[in-house]
Each structure stands twice: as structure tokens, then as C-alpha cells.
Length: 153
Image 1 (cartoon, rainbow, N blue to C red):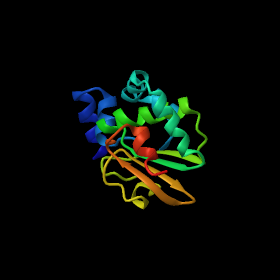
Image 2 (cartoon, rainbow, N blue to C red; image 1 turned 180 degrees about the vertical axis):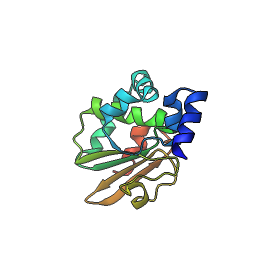
Image 3 (cartoon, one colour; image 1 turned 60 degrees about the vertical axis):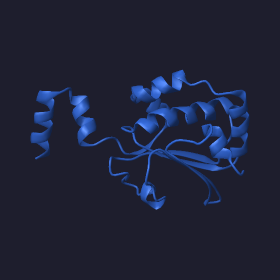
Image 4 (cartoon, rainbow, N blue to C red; image 1 turned 90 degrees about the horizontal axis):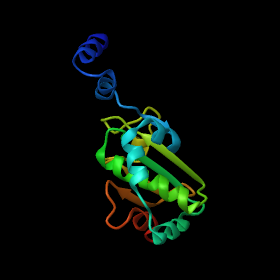
């Protein structure tokens, strides 16, 4: 059945578009691979210029864990995840860890990371310390992404 679907898809549109429709990438990915392999993320990364205030705010994340749950297919992820990548790079904040986890249309990944964090909307940014969730930013920040990520820290 899958072979027929791929063949049908290939006859009607470019194969890359078919692959995205059948099964978008899911799993852990590095920031660099995301920017290299997905044009929409790369374009937004290049277009975004963080403010000095936002770069300074990112220092509040020092030593924290960050989990980024997103979809390579999601317009909100296209907008927000590249902002985070640039904020982290320019602020040079040293996190305990950062994990970028792409999910499928069903908002799941094979490792179960999205399910373990009760993912409902993409992107979702989760700031943790010693395994305890401190901050969760869902879809679109209410202020700047840096403000929302560091609120209450």
C-alpha cells in the first residue's frame, strides 16, 4: 500500500513533497541539521535579529535543561524555533542540555519524549532544572521568546 501511495504521489508532485505528506521527520535533531536541511527554518533564522535585552535575558537559562518539541511541518515552529537557535547562539548561555525533538502530525516521536511531556501544540519549549519543569512556552510567546522562556526565573 505504501509503495502505491509513493508511486501515485511521485507521479503527481515532487517526491520531497510526497515524503513530507506521508511521514514528516520525527526524532531528535541538532540545531545545525535543522537549519541545513529545512529551508523554512534557515530563512527565519537568517531574518531574525535578537535585541540586546533578549540576549541578556537568555543568561537566566544558565545551567537549565531545555526541551524543544516542534514539527518540521508546523508554521509556528518555522517561526519560533529558529529564533531560539539564534538566541542561544548569540547569548552563548551554557545550558545543562538542549534537545530538539521533531514530532509527526500526530505530535508523537518514536522515543516517547513528546508523550512524556504531554505535548498538545507545536512548538512547545520546556525549561527544566534537575528534571523539574520550571517554564513552558506553547506555540507563540505572549512577549518575546526570551521574555517568556525566562519568566519567573
